[in-house]
Amino acid sequence: MNSFFTSINTRNSAGLISTLNSAYAQLATETDRISLFVLSEQIRGAEASLTVIANELFLSTATATQAATATTASTSTQSTSAAEASKSENTGSSVPTVEADILSKIAATNIEGAQNAIFNASINLNELLWEQNLYDTYINKGANIFLMIAFIVAFLGHLGMMIPLRYWYFSVALFLGSGIEFAGYAGRVRAVGDYSNVDAFLLQFICLTLAPAFVAGGIYYLIGYLCLVYGPHFSPLRPRWYSYIFITCDVFSLVIQALGGGIAATALQQHKSSETGTSIMIAGIGFQVASMTLFIVLYLWFLHSVHFKLPEKLYAPTIKNWWTVVIMNLKIDQLDHLWDPKNSHIRRKKLFKYNQLVILGSILFVYIRCIYRVVELAQGWTGFLITHEEYVLTLDGMMILLSVFLLLIMHPYFLFGKKALVLFSIGKKSSEKNKVESDEERGPQTAEKTFDETNDSLSELDLRVGSAHDDSSKAYPPTTRGSL
Image 1 (cartoon, one colour):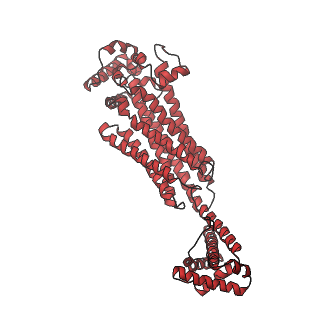
Image 2: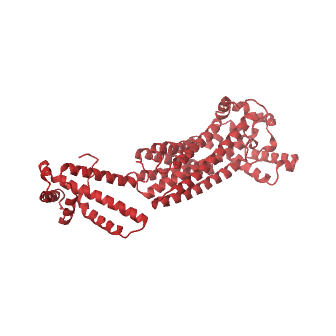
Image 3: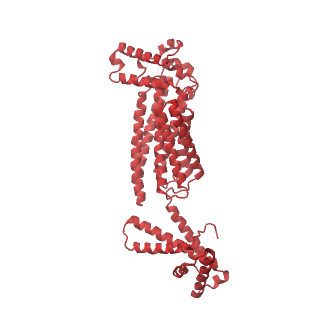
């Protein structure tokens, strides 16, 4: 027979008959929608399975001659008896007479009919199994194992760097994001061969929804360092506000997504429409995309100010200069004297010139993933994107993987160095001191005093730069330094 055909052990016949009788008995009095749906699936599965068993018994004993003459009740009885004897020889057990009578009534009377019956029953059973598949697709076990291993490597990498490098908030955000992604893909691997497993489905769905928010949170924090290294006055927001504002937005987005996911999951379990829950989820992810769009706009605004809104107009904001001057940072030496002179030692670090490319690249990877999720959910739970795993793996999994590994290889310690932590700490103290009244309100003398105190603190922490920068500091506005 064709390999598509299903084969079922005859020992299951008694249990299937019992299930069928019980389901029909309950069906007569049951009124609950969910229970009726479950009973209909039980009846459908039991009848298809008994059809397979009955016709397999017939085919195990029938010959071409018997099949041609098996048109009378006598011949049918002989076929059933022969089937019982054959099964007894092969399995060491026989089909009881009552069960045999039932199966003989189900079985076809010729070979072709039996084969067709088994084929149709096999289709029915496979369709029934597919309808219970929560993913509406087959999961690629190898690809998901690869992502699972890759994320645990990223998790261990960020965890291992956290203590010695002391970028606490960044490392916690990234190792949590990587760890939650690992759990999500572990859930997908667990679901292979058991696509109706609700626990595995919820594990992968919840984890893969939550994880990118942690990764984005770590990226938001990095721009605070960058603002202080170049000079806070270039930024449209105070450095720490990036974390406060956009992490709050992400948390709000996750709450909306969780609410929508809960409503959708409840509806699916009750075999009702999940449209309301899905719409709420789309709104949550849409809000996340909107907040991330705003972050990218503010970041680009900051980069524009740093490179083009300077006392000396060295470069025009053309597309070519955006690539060479801003993204690739190839003109950093020519512009360095126009930035905060106290932090030129950080900007002279070998890998610092890549910081803008790293931050922009990592946030764009997360951004692509979020846009994908909006489109995916807009198509519904049985839409094209969600039922074609190659898109899930590339536009979701690989985007977050590229982001966490980019931030692992180009860790902020390698970009900014250890002393950037001290700089951020001093900036925080300066912010707390200045939040009651601005420099302008206190007058130029008080502002100058605050600047001198900050310089003294930097000197004590060995952040003093060489005398070569004393002359260049005239181009940098001193009263704006240290403001968060």
